[in-house]
Length: 400
Image (cartoon, rainbow, N blue to C red; front, side, top):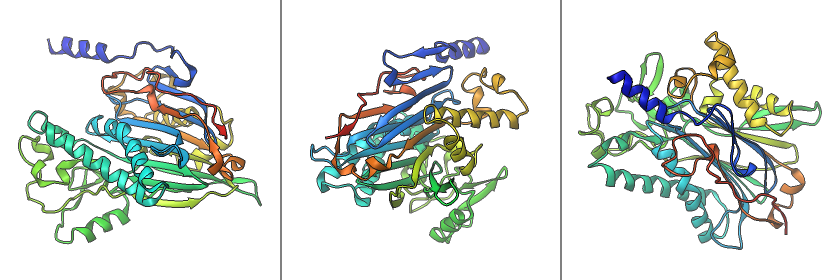
């Protein structure tokens, strides 16, 4: 009886086809089994490529590219926004961020009539507070929402300035041309918050000097309180507010000892960089990619191929490495269904953003229709597969 029920549930969540699935518009991307991709598109200051491969029963990675106005005001500022949201414990937090973070950013940008570190911090804070209100409302019916969270990586290019904001262990890497040699070097731009990194463990110990168990080595993996690898996130309220670390939350998430200040943080690390002509492209990806590829390997894959399909090539290279580690063929790995696939690799999301230096230099004068694309074609909480939902809007951005 149980096996019959499991088979029925698997059938309900199976992708509609293993062949290419085309949406009504090429702008919305394509699907090949558990892989969704948009090989080429245009943002305000160059081209982009995007790909997502699902491993979990429900896709926990969410992502978006928004290009055009970064404000609720018609007067700008204008630019390109990239968001990679790697959920854990479920998809609810990453979906919430996908629906609210960019809108919060536009609201604060309109208030200040500019893009700034302060605008980004306020947008992250408002998104965290918004999700907290969702958890508070759902606590009586669905207390496990308190144990759902998400990493959050954001890149913003505006008026020749690049902003990178990060919570958790997704990563942004730049490909930078060395004119003297012609090489393109990988430069990591994001600060990661994962207990496997010694400096993060030191940071946690310094913030919690009275707690000898703030980080615990469990099954050869460093975890905060023995529960979670990342030290910063949106959500994960069970480790931020003591009132959610109690029954009826599952016992595996509950701490024995009370805590009086947040264990995890929602404060992003933010980098600001003035773009230069030798800054060629940016790779934004969830940790599912970086688990299998080094920064330089990823940059080499982008640099040595055409722009078209670069994100898909990165995903394929990571999957080939995942198959190799398990001593299996890539073609066999592709046949494994979601859920089971998670034992071989994580959900992987990649956005490659190419930077046209001639457009970067006059970015403040650029205008154009809005571009809005969501990874996987995901466009709402009811979506069960990677099938594109037509969430892309017009391309063809240009100068006014």
